[in-house]
Image 1 (cartoon, rainbow over the protein chains, first blue to last red):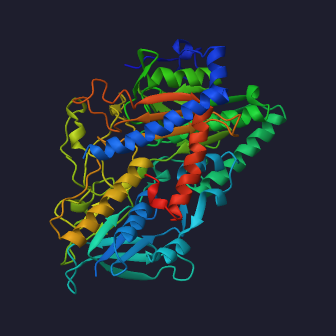
Image 2: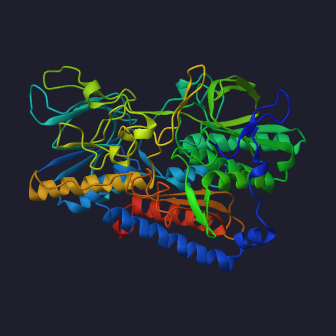
Image 3: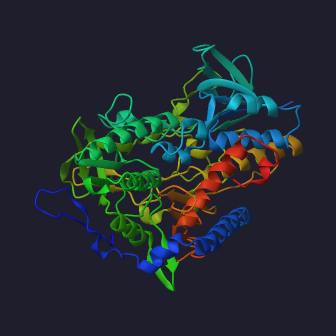
Length: 61
Length: 485
């Protein structure tokens, strides 16, 4: 069962997902997404995770 | 000398051919058959589709690479496979029809000792009336050429918006059985970004119209993430992104027809609707290439070798069973065609045993079932592993164990860029391990340490890095094989 349900915002309107239950980012989160320092760290971590997945995928066999 | 033929030069086939050439001496012949003269890094077609890149940035000609590497190249499409040989020769054979300008229409029969089918998808725009850029009314980003057309259409819509005329842009899937929802998701956010850059976002209505039953499903049954000590879902994560960007989402939709003014669709509750549009990028459903198969006597055995969808049957468990009984072990690991030890299908060409997301039907009987994605990273890994199997069998004999690469054990990354520029870009970056959830092994179906969803500038850097790395790798430049699939 989806957490975000479809609804008709008004009679006859297109049925769309009611997104009011989806969390919005805080200002701090938005700033963090653009912070070069924070993002560089995440970039390294993401690349490391991809490499780890490659190794795990190979080891599984 | 062994003859190895690879059908298709996409991510899977090209990877297999390069590794075969690396692993085998020049005494063995590696032949690639592809109707396209160019290789395309398809993930970057999204950027072509919004005018941020040109076709030349995402494609390169295959012939010079194959000439340099000592790989024979036939610009042709496969039309028939003779896996048991024919009356003249017991070796397997494949019939091809040339598509290049010099030999267009010429046919030939190529003999093989080993055959890899990596033919990629047939874009089935005809499945929905009015779908597609050629005979329909929608654009696509499935090929670099399609993406260029999409960018032109998007420019026209932005010009209208600049004149103060409101526009509705619809992006998503054009049929209930489509796959690659991630590509539609990514294109949505690139379009949103372009509209903001043009200063016209407030006049545009952007609608994501998808066959997914829930946001964040992506045809892989959604994901569970662990963030800040809590478990959350890809649905909420995706919903947050949609809400933040003001994108409307219509889910569980099967598009039945596209007219010049409106998209007609049915949703899971069986209700039908009409959505007026000014711009529509709707992906088509995929099918296998129309390749026939014959036994040595010329009897048609296509139904033995291929599923009704046109994809080739491999070492999967194709037993029909309900969703609740689906298991990770149903998925293939060697990609060998049953009954043949010298024939494989990899990438999109293999027939999946079933969907990954739960298939659904509307009360009217319309099937709305996202097909499993099997592109990118998994496709390259499959191609490499089959190449290693063939190399081992040539070097060590036919009993050499097959290398395995199941989608139920390998991971994948999906980076949906949403913007451009090294300091102003952004992206939704996801990783999952495994691609096919394994509920027997992991409570949430996947390894929570590796299954993550993140938003930010770093995802955009990852996407750019992958663009340049994989083009470098595909050009087989020095050290290419050190870049993992």
